[in-house]
Amino acid sequence: MFYPLSAFIAYRYAKSSKQSQTSFVSFINRFSVAGIALGLMALIIVVSVMNGLEGQLKQRILGIVPHIEITETPTSNIDLSKTPIEITKTPTQNNNNVGKTPTQNSSTVSNSTGVTETPTATSRISETPTFNSGSLSETPNENVPQQQYVTLDEISKTPIDGVVASMAYREAEAVVQSRSELRGVQVHGVEPGVMLAHTLVASHMEQGRFDDLKEGSFAAIIGRALAIKLDVRVGDRLRVMVAGASVYTPFGRMPSQRLVTVVGVFDMGSQMDDKVMYMNLHDVNRLMRDPKGNGQSLRLFLNDAFDYLSVVNYLTDTMGVFANNVRTWRERQGPLFDAVKMEKNMMTLMLLLIIAVAAFNIVSALVMVVTEKQGDIAVLQTQGMVPTTIMWIFVLNGLFNGLKGAGIGLILGIVVTLQLNNFLDLIGSPLALAADGSGLPVEMDAVQIASITLLSLLLCVIASVYPARKAMKIAPSQALQNE
Image (cartoon, rainbow, N blue to C red; front, top):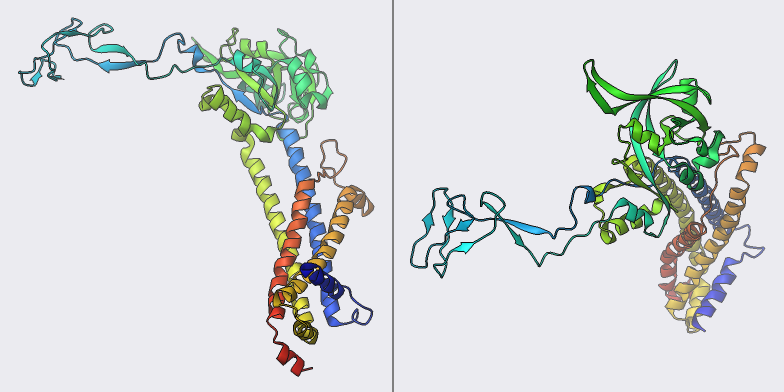
């Protein structure tokens, strides 16, 4: 019966009667509730819009950039059939494979090569196998476990949580020349079937399809922004020059170059549209003077690009892939997403401070209530109510005010967020920032909204502690003497 009594009295205090609705205390109370509601509504709207913008960046940019790229593993340079060995130096006095060891009675002797020989307990001659000159010897180390490596084919065939697909991939820096312009681009050698099934670029094609990238056709798909800068259309030809595959001729260094035909145009609406050109993987290998594809890498498509760390940890810790051979989208676009995240955090902090200001208006309202109700508090104390119960009355009173403000702000925030684009159209300032040009991107996160609401209630409770402690310290004798 302890806390229900506190809650009952606090609820009666929180309800404003007709006589007290015009009082200054009631005005401060309603003002604090309105501040909490408006602050929480603004925070929900801003966070939802920032989530939508971050999702659009994730969709547009990370739909083009490889999520994870694994370069060639050391299996191409290391014979895995050999057990790891330990190479040690064995001093010898001549080119024979026999090392002489002095007896126990002899002192330490230096040979003609300047190598000090340590005396042993016996005077026998030890032979140590060497490679060629007797200076190096192979000693198998049985305590060192054999290190295992995996090939790119094995990685592509291994099911990994979070990875939806993989394909052979190659990327090269190139210069593209049209009849009127010259631009630097990244040439992505891809497998058309995998790109058609697992990328957003395939669903944002304005002209052509990835199936048009036939092997040996030297066809290319470019972004709409790049097509405008180069002034080319589908069917036009471009000259692609790759300096990384240059050869030296009597006329100087000549880059590898080839005429390619534009067979498709995509439009992701991102900053990467004018920097990427897609070609068939085998055509890129031939352009790089590597028809066997020895320089190919493996591209992994993730279900969630932001969950790349778990996949990288699995590759390096479980499958034995070197960390230097794994490249993620963070290396290219990480600073951009860090800036967006920092901006979202700062906006959230700023609006939380607005809610905090509104919540701490409860302090002034409750202090006035405590001053006004000193006689009632004294009567309750003389009837046997302990100070802790009195403190909980005013803490719950502040919590009830916070519940009213948070509830109103939560409802208004959700409604306004869902109808935000309609409101913008109504006031005559529509924004077309979504990928399809439909309007302002909005993405509401239920967990995030619930956390913000609970944090607002927590601020209201914290703001109620000071007046509640002041109420519990009222002396009944002094309070009743002033009545």
